[in-house]
Image (cartoon, rainbow, N blue to C red; front, side, top):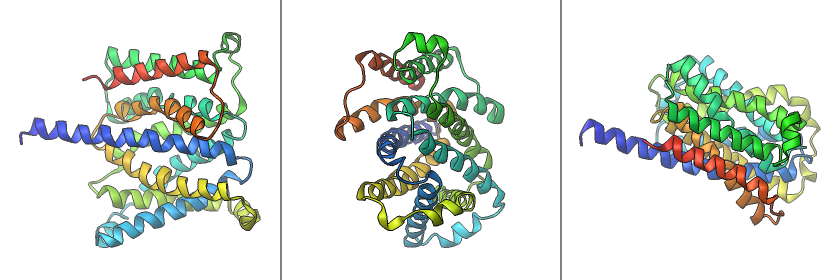
Length: 300
């Protein structure tokens, strides 16, 4: 296989990883929106990341990669940086979902490609062409249309909800995380890199939210909270962290984060599956713009 063909195969694997990522992460918006007011965000995320790290640790042990994982702990400050970005993103997500509708929060998430493109240029000097800039602009317009619920008066007044505003700062941290993976990775296996990133995230959130963890009535939580905890720990943490790191080593940052444009569409399907009403028809126009933006971003 030629070097060019090998690069093409690697890129396809990266695209498949991010397609899976977009579907999995959408579920955390819909499930999280239903339980956000029943458990403190710090408590939920500290436990979910501890479980996520444990799951990845079991996989590493089963594959006999313990020595490589221990060696990957060199320069642990790298994982503190990545874990800090992730901690900020996930905690603000659940804080935001206390007041923001899941589809609206997912629309805020679709602003990350724009920010990721900026961070990609600053950290990696990844240049965006005219088509990429157009796609990001369209995606941002679609996201804003959904965030403001197709209300032109609200858009003109820029009356953004408190939950969306809080989650925006977390999305900025997520956007910086993507190019930082490539900056900080020193050739370590992705699985080992994922394990230490998850572990660092669990430690950071655990220290910050230790009072909330102790105060939570874990035995009194309803089953849906435990379902959400299990889903976010395994599908929306262990798997998605691995998928983003896998794709970040194969695709430019802007293309990795381009798949976030599919998130509102996936969330809409999740919401319908969970028995929630269809959003106003006008909102669907914004979702259509984000899908169009994805097509432009992925075009070679």
